[in-house]
Amino acid sequence: MPDRAKILLVDDREENLIALEAILSSLDLVPVRARSGEEALKALLNTEFALILLDVRMPGMDGFETAAHIKRRERTRNIPIIFLTVVDSAPDYAFRGYAAGAVDYLTKPFDPWVLRAKVSVFTELYNMNKRLAEQASLLRERLTGELPPGAGDHASVLPELSRRLTAVEDELARVRELARKSQDPALAVPLADLRDRLTHLRAGFDALS
Image 1 (tube, helix red, strand yellow):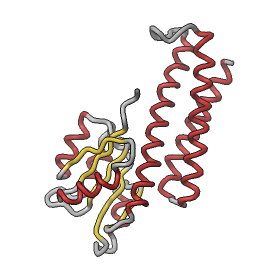
Image 2 (cartoon, helix red, strand yellow):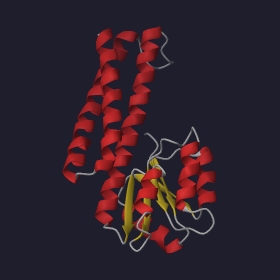
Image 3 (tube, helix red, strand yellow):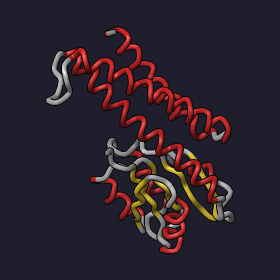
Image 4 (cartoon, one colour):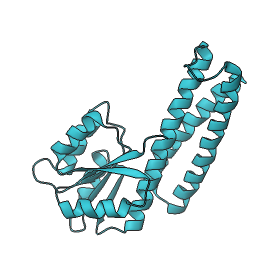
């Protein structure tokens, strides 16, 4: 069974972390807490995350500075970040959030259903990207004629790869429909990127078939 996606929750207030975990408890993911920007950066050193929920107002290193460090690192720069802050924040906070690399920006108190829906879609995109990477690796091995132990012979790999690709294509169509209904512009870029990767992989497979 594949590992469940991990979500990094960054907030200096314990009650906020507890609330976030409660909101996300129905989703198939693993929440990981960080009580400061420094703690978040340490967690990112050796753990892979599908998404970061990052509070803006924190003592010491605030959310904007934390995001800047995350985006400077090659290993973490592509992790989506959703900023969270209170409704009475400075009017330029949203602009600064997007400038810092956030894919979305939510003000507290936010609608739990909206947050859960956003996290769910980003988690599904992360999982689909993981599966595509595995299938791309299989395709490369098929092209070089070197399959890993237990993968079966070349004749058996192609039908299995085709089945997996079809499953991801069907899943992407479902997620794109969810994104269309939610009218969430934050999902446009990651969905387009995933669609392009899937199209490229399908073309490579078709060339072999």
